[in-house]
Image 1 (tube, rainbow, N blue to C red):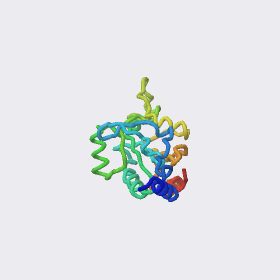
Image 2: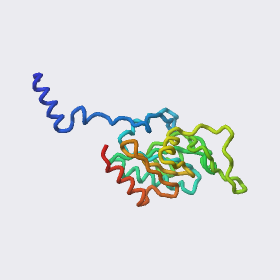
Image 3: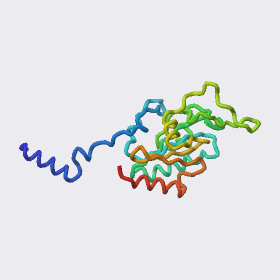
Image 4: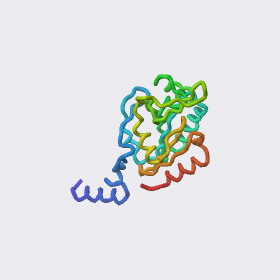
Length: 206
């Protein structure tokens, strides 16, 4: 093919929306510009791979009254993944010591009980104040030298002014990586209020 023919073909592709600009990946927002270890093998995963998507970030636990929300989260992921939504699960033992198990035990529960296919990450601390009830029914005090908070959750807390108060707190991050909506544990991922926010963020343009 002659040089001018190649140039004409490239111009045609650009006009059709297949040029370099169309193929470029979205820039990685600061909120996602970090790594997190994968649950199964603790292999670091760069969260920039989810740039341009609507991201649901949720702290999970295996022995909580809200644990059945795993099924709702998977249903949400299955319904909207082709439109650009991803769910990221972060197990945590912060609340009620309801996630005491190993990574293998957590992964087995997710897969065998709830059929979870969305990405899951290693267990981490998601808040500074740990509301773990004692036998007397009072919350325990934070440890004198607490573990560092998962930096993603620290940033989400700063941006929304709302830290997780229990398992299955949910943050919705918009495609722009700037818009963040917080939903408490009791809001089911398939509840109308949550779905309205999901639809609004999915319809927003970068």
